[in-house]
Length: 464
Image (cartoon, rainbow, N blue to C red; front, side):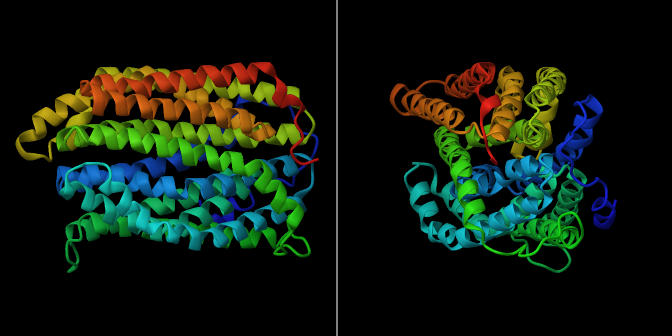
């Protein structure tokens, strides 16, 4: 499907939405899930190429990429919250506000970039404090700093993609992400291994290839967005005007949404670095396990984004019962998906791991054994993770962001502290430390079930 065709796939917004159905949910969710899956494929292939370079490069792509993501997570969360604003205005039948809200997100993204670049030296400082092998940390620093340079591409993609997710035109986001994968995978191959007369760049090539894919995706979104807001019903006077009232609303509800991923991903990054401090074999094994976990997690993240869009549309139309029905449908889809993944991880863990470990010296026997056990253990939190993402997306759609933020931050930092104690003080086995991640995700899921069950989200006013 071309971007031009995708741009006309949905009707003008209306405040009278039909009751939610599985077909409507899947129409919104599947393109987002596919788009996130394409990102998973891109990440998977990127790390697969690096596994052929060496286990240090593979592990560094995880730790360096995660550190870069932590630094930009706050801005990504705040900017991405425009999805809920756009969706509620769409449901309320106010399309001009959809365009104006997105403009504020774009300006916020551009204003944040110099601040992110100012954090660049922190990457080197952070890795010097981790106590890992210098050969691993130097590669992670290079990779993390290069990705931070390219972070503006991702943040602008989030701003523009949030507009289309909010109005239900999710196929546009799918097309843009598929384009990113189609551009990034060959670019990574050429740059990592040095093809077409170019020198082999290793991990630097992987970072550059990722940025090339991100740029291609951004161009698709920008071209389609400009065409969309140039036509009725999203065309409006002063579309590019700074509007303090909308910006304040975005910041008011978006800041908790930004603080949460920044602090939770920070804590998760500490967990990863503590695991990597066991040595290069454990670092490589954890990276392999997380690579397959990402193949499961990222599509589920798309399902959570779909929940935000659909639930916010019904809330904007003043139909909380319809919103609750949409959550129930999404949860059932998430459970079905999770059951399939659990069976896959338990039954085929060893086979999956060899995709990466076969590229190591002597087949990476120790790495493969550890990664197989780690992957099977991760199956213990897949169901909780999928429910957590859907419920979190639903609460976010209503503007209920502060309570889930506090719970997530506390649980993630308790996990990080427990892992530090187990690794650095007790000297516990790797799998014992690994279990803290599983326990944390299950507890967070239970907390969000409780919050959703209180129904306080039904009475919150996001757009007024």
